[in-house]
Amino acid sequence: MDHFMKATATLDEQQQATRQRYYRNYVLFILTLVYAFNFIDRQIIGILSPFIKADLGLDDAQLGWLKGIYFALLYTLVGIPIAWLADRYNRINIIGISLTMWSAFTAASGLAANYLQLALARIGVGIGEAGGSPPAHSIISDLFPKESRAGALAIYSLGIPFGIMLAFFASAFFLKGGAADWRLVMISVGLPGIVLALILKLTVKEPARGKHSRPDTANQPSVWQSVKVLLRIPTWWGMAMGISFGSFGNYAISTWIIDYYVRAFEGLDITQLLIAFGIINGTAYAAGVWLGGVIADKWGAVTRRAYALLPAYALVIGVPAFYFSLQVNDLWLSVGLLTLLLFTSGMYLGPCFAMAQTLAPINVRAMSTALFFFVLNIIALGGGPTITGIISQALIPAHGETEALRLALSYLLVPYIGAILVFFWTSRKINHDWDQAAKREAEA
Image (cartoon, rainbow, N blue to C red; front, side):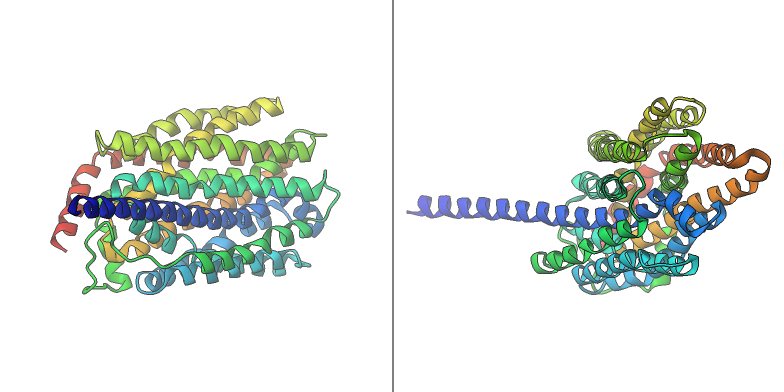
């Protein structure tokens, strides 16, 4: 009888563990889908850029401000107080409200009749999206142990390529070779996010904090105290700067490459190009993001330096391919070379986000992600598209629109090389900082 009861108890525990695993994976799926909507709404203006330019009569500098700093400035600033709230209050509610807000402002962008109205709508999208990733990263870190955290955050990061893919596909579907209004695309990709916010609220519960770590609930630091703790960790800072320099290039490319190809290759089929980029982002870029997390976790079990070395080696391969993609005269050869960059640059997302969580004290994890994104987005999202547009506009009088934009994109070699150097430097610091994080956790 005792044997039967023990066997029954064991079976119940196994079933409960299975249910918990399925639920954990479901939550990860929903959060990844939310992140995909984040990037649909963020990316769409770069895809529609040639049509917006023609309709509203904008120049490259104005487009650069729209694609970059107007979105990024309040996105990064609001992210800090939202993360402070996420470390204390219901994170699911915060994500749901934020998703509703940025989706509504994306739809409102389609109603803009002039540059000022579109700029204000982009600022609204940025404010809403600030409440997405910090609480999501914190939730994932409560659901997954540190040994599999890079893989989980890499899966979450698949929202980036899949979101970009869906943005390209939606644009191709609605534009139909340029015949439809770009405003229809904005409205069509914005409204579904409100439905997803309801699904999130109804099906996902707020998880307990610190399940895989020992939480220090008695000592909740202030925002400034949290910032000081994080900035004293060299690896945290190094990974933040590495991903920022790399993403400076990636954001510039993602928001300007359609403009470049439209200018450089006359008579191209815009619908075909949009579909091709959707496929590339959904396959090559997504594969790079996923593999980055998988390889980092497996290689990281051998040496922790892998979390920084993998991004460095990947960019050493991808950056030269990007440079040559701007030099060739064949459209599809250029797209093929750019695909190699997308594949390799995706590999730094999982390792970088994992370090932002693993090295942070438990009670500042959402703040760690917010500060990480603050550094990342001020430099990358705010700087990449904006500075590229400003440089392109400045070069147009001497070189013409096509060559000016090609040169502006070529200058992205500088931040990419900076990213490689920073990742190599960080690989020398990671062992010490990991040990210190484990020590803090044990003493909590």
